[in-house]
Amino acid sequence: MNKKTNPIRTTPKVVDVARLAGVSTATVSRVLNDPSKVTQTTRDAVLAAVKETGYRVNRAARNLRTNTSRSILALVPNLSNPFFSNILSGLERELNAEDYSLLVTDSGDAGLTADQMDRLIAAGQADGLIVLDGSITASDVAEVQDNNPSCPMIFACEWVNDVNCPSVRADNVGGVQILVDHLWQNGHRRFGHVTGPAANILSNVRRTAFEQRVQELGGEIRPSWVVQGDFSIAAGGRAADTILDMTDAPTAWICASDQIAFGLIAGLTRGGIEVPTQVSVTGFDNIEMTEVFNPPLTTIHQSRNKMGQQAARSILELIRGQTGNSPQVHILPVHLVDRESTGAAPV
Image (cartoon, rainbow, N blue to C red; front, top):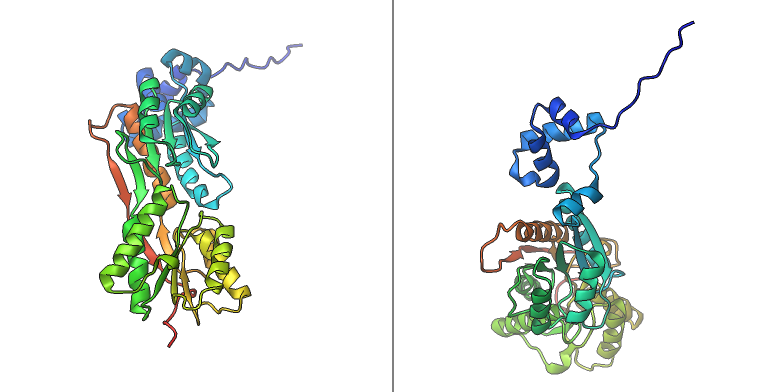
């Protein structure tokens, strides 16, 4: 009696992928290691063959051979802040498409130092660094770059002035100007501002843009109408307490972030001030809660997903040596989202 024997299943090899896709093994390697160097048609054919054959890349061997980790490290100042989620999503989607992994580290509230960043880069064995935290000094940025010449760095969202480093950011100045103009068109002439952290570059840029635009239009601002905050809901609540003690408060408040605006509106409401009937409030960022908050928040939308995608493309261009000598600054457009937290100035 003849016994049936099961065929021996062999592990698919790169030659099997090449044969099925109708390309050379070198082309398969390029698709898997540097897909930007091949056409989309070839990429599709090779990836379809990879899926059909079940071929798996030996990442450890490949990384050892090429002396790379195929990973990018992102430093985020506060992972609990929902603002950063869409940026990280855009980063991960773009990097995964190019066969890179994203490593994320919470850099904390304290200012980063060169030594801390050196240790994070070494621990992650990263091929590139994307910094979403502008608290590091220009001298520390230069030191990190000198200490890690094979690990290029870019900034996303926040940045540091006077450094030789690309950045991707929203049009913060334009966004604040849009908010002031919107409130001006609704009849408001007295303006207040709740800032972000005092040393934060976004806080300073948005505060300066606010003051300049109000002055250009001929509106009224006072030093006491600029209240210090820190991008948090709690900061908005503290600002509300300050405003409730004012005898002659502004009719419109521009907050440096949506979370500040949430806390401010909640605090004013508890204090008996109606938004927007008695006072208008705006945020900045258009995070997910703005649409369902009560009242829905008027704010500036910045495409955080696109910011993450552009940051990923920029770091990969640096890794591949595809950029020029001068660092690029990508400023992404923003637009107004007019909701129910703003209205006509009270008579």
